[in-house]
Image (cartoon, rainbow, N blue to C red; front, side, top):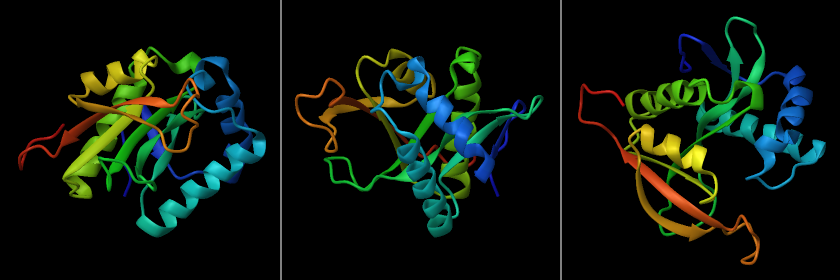
Length: 180
């Protein structure tokens, strides 16, 4: 079972997604708030995502635009593997190719994933985080109904790295019978 939306198909990754996913990760507007990824790093990310699906049955899905069939990004859930004041936790994240940004697609995908996390997986809480400069991402967190709960330095980045500082948002499961 996987989330669905009117305009998007959230699906498992395919071998032929690797080159377009690397191209997406190389777009200047996508990578400006992320650590640079080589082709090997992009492929390794998909290997980790595949392993998460094998272990949990869920993870970060490939986002495919229904009408064209184009791979336009990713959205999904993942257990946070490192320690922080808010872990253990499951995060929601998204990444969208530049031409598809600003069309409400990230929100559409994220709402479906949040509903999946709360309704299907019965998670109590879902978190999300980004750098403070990434106003589009934390703005979406707010529009989704998530609340800022703090800031932290990402443990996988050097303290003096410009992307080290992160804002943290979270959402608790809605009362029974309600959706996000």
